[in-house]
Every structure is written in C-alpha cells, then in structure tokens.
Length: 465
Image (cartoon, rainbow, N blue to C red; front, side, top):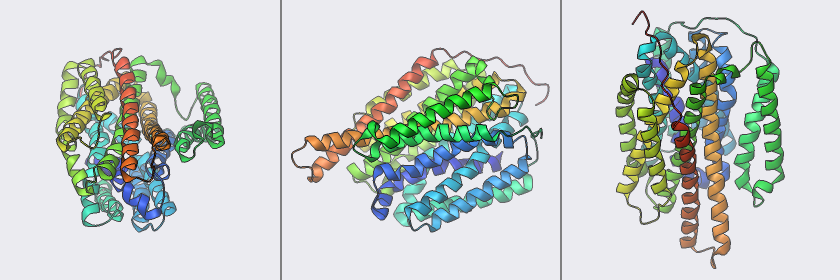
C-alpha cells in the first residue's frame, strides 16, 4: 500500500501542481488561459478515457505487471515534461503522466478492497482518499517552492524522482492479489467511450477559446458527437455479457449516490484549485512560493483529518459526515465567490482549510459507502466507474470554470471605457474568477441535495483481520 499510495499521490499531485505555474507558462509560451488549461483538463480527460480500460486490465494482468507498467509510463512522461521546450511537448508529457496514473488508480482501489476486511474498509478507504485529497492539496505548495527557487521544469523532475522511489519499493514488495479472469475487451466500447467523454469535455473546454462561445461550430459538433457516443456507449454496455464498464453496478442506489457525490467534490475542488492560485498570483501579485505556503495549512489539515474521518465513518456511518461536509464546502465556496483585491491572506487560508476539510468529509464516506453496497465480484467495475467519473468531473469542472471566467472577463472588458488600463484588467479577472467560484458553489449545492438521501450500507464482518 505504501508503494501504491506514494505513486498515487504523485499522480494526483500532478493534477494541481501545474496550476501554480499557469501564469509563468502563459508568458513563456505566449498562450491564453483557455489554452493553458488543457495541461490540467487534458490530464484529467486522459484519465477519464483510460480508467474504464484499466478496470478490465486488472483482470488481464497481475498486480505487479500493472504497477510496473504504470510507473514506467509515468516516469517517461515526467522526463518529457521536465525537458519540454514548447507547449505541445509539455502537453505530450502530461498526457503520458495521465496514462500511467490511469493504470494505477483502479489498481490502488482494487488492492485496498481485496486486502482489507470489510469492517476495516473505512480506515482502508481513508488511506486511498488521502491520495486523492492530499496529492492535489500539496501540489500548489511544493510547486510554489520549486518555482521560487528553480523553475517549472522541476515540478516534473520531482515527480520523476519520487516515482523512482515508489518503483524500487514496489518492485521489491508488491505481491499479486487480483484474480486473472481475462474478460473480452470490446474495442467498439472503448472507441465510443473515448468519443463520448472526449467530445463532451473538448466541447466545454473550447467554449472560451473564441468570441462565439457555445455557438462556435467546434463546440456544437463536439458536443453532439460526444452525447450521441455516450448514449450508444451506455446502450452497448447494458446489452453485453462482458462490458467495458459494467453499468449494472448502477442498480445499487448508494453506489450511485456515492459516485455522484465524489463527482461533485471533484468538480468543485478542481475548479477552486485552478482559480485560487491564479487569483493570488495575477490579482494580488503574490509570489508562487507564498501562494504555496498560503495553501499549505489546508493540505496539512486534510492529511491529519483523513484517518480521523475514516475512523468516524467506521463508527457512525455516512450521513453524520457527508451533510456537514457539504454545508462546509458550500459555505467556503460562497465566501470565496466574493473575493476582491481587499481580501486578506488570513481569510483565504481559513476558507481554503474549510474547503479541504469539507471535501474530505464528503469524499471518503461517500466512496466507501457506495463501494460497500457492491458484491465482491463488482469491485473492479465499481472502482473503474467511480474513478472514471471522478476524473471526468475534474476535467469538466475545470473546463466550465475557465469558460465561465473567460466569458465574464470578455463581457466586463466590453463595458469599460479604457480596456488597456491595467486596473480594469484586474477588475475583469476578479469578476471572472468570482463567477467561476460561484459555479463551483452551485455544484456543491447540488451535492447537498443528494447528501440528504445518503443511507448507511451495513456490511458483514470478515472472519479474518
């Protein structure tokens, strides 16, 4: 688990570490916010497309084979990113990193479900959730330190060196725990999944790249292709004996609610974690190092509270944590949606810490409770679905947030008498960022409605510990 978690933390660290470097990359490569966000949404989209396949690969290859392949691909991607001299090469490195992570995440989930008994699953899932909450949380802090002392290239070199440690430990200790059943891999399902998820996320990501917005022909065509492909994908999965993604898991209501709540958490968190560093660097003109330090307390609290929340879940159940966590998340994002140039560092630290704790209180219990309702033979399917939608949620949340922000910025600048005035540029950015954070809050509100329907799934105790 140490090897899997160390590699997993780097996989999720890579989701947000690049966010601190956004302003540097915009200047370095002379690109826009809508273009640079592909470094994050492209990473998440790749995960979302490949994770369903990974759920099947777990049943085709041994735990060791998948672990080693995952880390080798991630290391190659990190090396390419570290040496990148153009945006295109950097994007290729990011996508390879995501390919490696897509093999790892379902493997980590599935291994934890197999090796821990049911009555300890809350504590086990708190370890896994730690990867998905602490990794993205520490990304900005470490990234800020590296940018202040070195350069953005070192974000990739640090990933590479840490992955090498995980590779050495894993090669020594990881055992094969998953049964090999070799189900048929349906190529048509994989194509439909790629076109579906890829088309929708690409459409949303492209909205902010032109003045036409949603009426842009690229957006319309991509959205139509994506929706049709997803409908065909769902229809095909429901009529196959060995589907790429076993949607029959969705017959379990708590699994559905748990998956949707994780979806909500990922959308809200990724939106906020993309906007906040940009706000502090471009509006408040704070250094990358200071931004990382401002976000550090939230990261530490998330790490400290993760095992505590796992224990509370095992003892008291789901709703005790989920509803208060959603209320805390909504409140944090509501206050964030009113940030201005007068907002203090203390306020940002407190709100970010509350946001991280709120998301943690929802994520781990929802995930564990949902998976607990599935029979053991559906664990690979359940983890694949949950992880896929989680990454798609991150890509969609980030893309919509950037789209909302750029649209508001453009409308603001149309109404000002002197668009070239730097003050107006900052005010436009603030207005755009406020709208993006308000979008994240509305997503969390939708999650709060879902949270009311959460019920605890009771599991039988195992005979071994």
